[in-house]
Every structure is written in structure tokens, then in C-alpha cells.
Amino acid sequence: KDSTGQSTISSRVRFIDGGAALVGHAASSDAAFSSVKRLMGRTFEEARHVTTVGALFFANMEQLSHSSGVGLRCESSNQIYEPQQVASEVLVALLARSEAACGVPAQRAVICVPAHFDQPQRAATLEAAERAGIKKVRLLE
Image 1 (cartoon, one colour):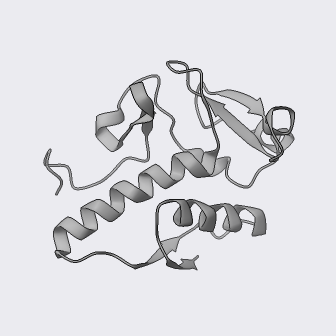
Image 2: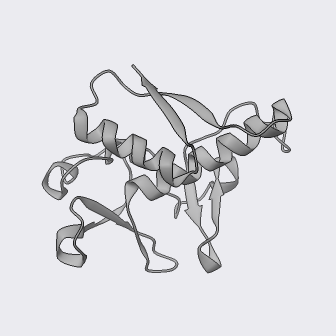
């Protein structure tokens, strides 16, 4: 269990002033991103058809920068975040919790992904893990 007594971590992320991220139950808010894994590795056109993510504001990353795919606009800061960046915050929180429970630094991880994830979605998951500081990752269906 975490410091609040919760035994699970929600994949909700809310960015607050200064770009800090609240993850899990602490991020409970209408302004929080949730279920971003459904957008990872997707093109802007594909992401427009994902309706289970909630009331998010999408941005076409091809119009904003040299990267492709979808961006998520944070209402409070008006910043654009890639889904991999949001997902990496969840992984950082999971790593911290694991390290606190085990008492040793985590250097490797096995991440379960849905069986229907295609290659771009798997690559985006690996990118999120890399951004979270995980050096060696194995994906498992």
C-alpha cells in the first residue's frame, strides 16, 4: 500500500504548476489525463476516433513540431504533452513505489501491454519506459 493506504495506482496524471505531476488517486480531477495508453503510438487521425479517454483536447503534433502523432493539451498550463510523456509519469510513480517496498533501486522492468497493441504502440510503450529511467524493459502480452 502507498502512503495514503491505496493498494492500486490509477493511471490518471495531472500536471500542476511548474510541470510537476500528480499520479494516481492524487490526480483525481476533471483536469487529469487518463487512459492515455489508448493514444500511444497512434497518429492524429487514429486518435480522433478514440472516445474512451474522456474530455481531452487533442493537438496534431505534426503541425506543432517535427514529431508525429497526438498531443494532449493541459488546460491549466496550456502545455502540450505527448502520451508517452504522460505514461512515463505513471511508470515513475510505480518505480518509486516498488523501490520503497523492496528497499532497492529498480533497474529492470517487465511491462504488460494489451495483446492487440501494434508495433508503434509497443515502441511508444518502450519510449515511455525509457523516459521514466528504466534501463532494461521487456514487454509482455
